[in-house]
Length: 111
Image (cartoon, rainbow, N blue to C red; front, side, top):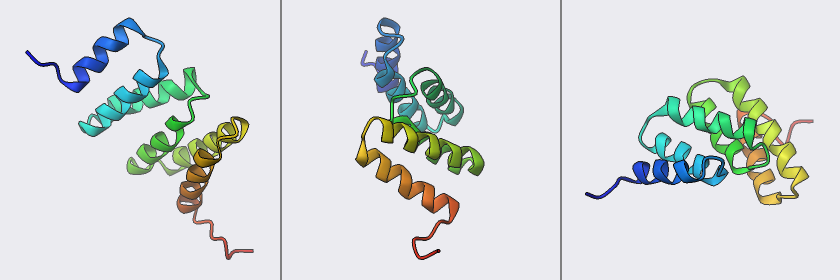
């Protein structure tokens, strides 16, 4: 019997319960399977227990947007930009900044 990707990730997580990449992969897999609530739980758990895992902020913010939780998306992007800046992750910062500007309606031509 071949295990599904989700089953494999859950097995790996049993051996490494604090592995942030596995938690992130599970959140992403649940999202791919349209199990939004489970994806949300894993993403939110990551920002609480592994706040330096920068990749979470973009995807959690996008999920909040999809759920029409715009204030949550905005604050997630803000926190993510802060973490990315502290980690000197310019790529993640610019991605977060772009979606933040999009969701807040910020326009570079505004004064």
